[in-house]
Image (cartoon, rainbow, N blue to C red):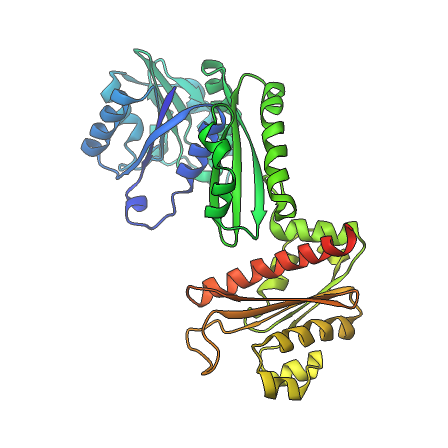
Length: 415
């Protein structure tokens, strides 16, 4: 079955609000085995909304509209859909009762007159009670077409879709979509695709798709099935094959696990503590690690040593090293990592020093970054020449630092 998404609201067209509903709905529809071929945004205008809906009904089995179900005059979605599909509008006693109860339990003593508009629905529509607001959702069915109307606020739309729309869609679409993600760090997207080209070219069910992230590549393996058991039997061997081709470059096969989460899990697994020492990234590496719940078990301290004086004072970087090689050098990165361990008695320290830009320091080019990791009296040092603006260079540096830490732990403890 094909689905079309229509987001209603002039505020979306003007960029006043980020359209997170479309992303949410597209993802959930895909997981239900529904094909989303078109999506669009239309303002609060009856004529344009009517034209958009007619076009969608002409090419899609299901149309999902979000927004425009409120009590104000410019909320026209319900009225326009009813007019286009030939439904008359009637007051629904149950919805009116829910509105009365909603306001009685709130801070308002009286119900604004315009809110009664939300108790008027297309006759014969399936009503989706709103447990988080006043506007009910609606499902209109006619001539083999289905139109689903959802409230615009995400905190109303998302739970309504999950609890009420999903069971409805599953009842009319028996096939489901299951997917697993293989997350790879340290290999570029083109190299990943090349290594998987034979699998991609011969894919049927499941399918394989690559997605480039900052410093990472995610490979989604997706199967269209009728049961979770069938999905596992189809997806498992493909995941196994991908892991065998990329080895330790794969850091996770869990949808919800981040690179920093995988690193913290390794630190916990081997009983290690970590300290960070940063120059050009200014604490971004420490922040990524601290975002992980439970990191307090393994995180010792984070140093931001932006100046040469701070590098000498906090990390005991040799003055001669800075003078001879400069702050952005392999030698300085090495001493920063060693100094972080000695200063905090941590088991491992990761250090970053580089030129983030926008201006060069006169000798070293913008984008030159050195990353070092010290553990068990061994130092790993890598250098990169990143491209992009200041923010992109710093972000890429953090990803590479996390990956270096991950690989250093594996190198030490999986021999």
